[in-house]
Image (cartoon, rainbow, N blue to C red):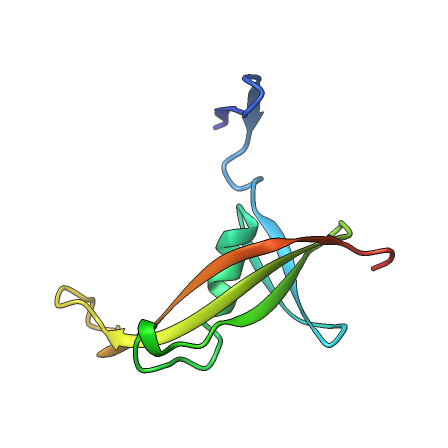
Length: 116
């Protein structure tokens, strides 16, 4: 099975369903400690944001800078990220805890490394 996707140039691109997953390494002090995957850098950044120390609510969360290098490239995507704890929805599955960590991000830019 393949998907036909119209890109922003108007060209049709054919792709397999999982071929659009990309890997992004979290950079901390020059080290790459964790890898997050997603179809877009923002998806990976949202996953990384949920690993931050959560605040009691979104309005109390202090944004932290996170940097994600796209594997196989010299691009580093820079985000302000924050996390908070809130009560799980009433229709949550049985396995889900009563409180969940949520996260959000705001893109700050892209940097290009001289070397990986």
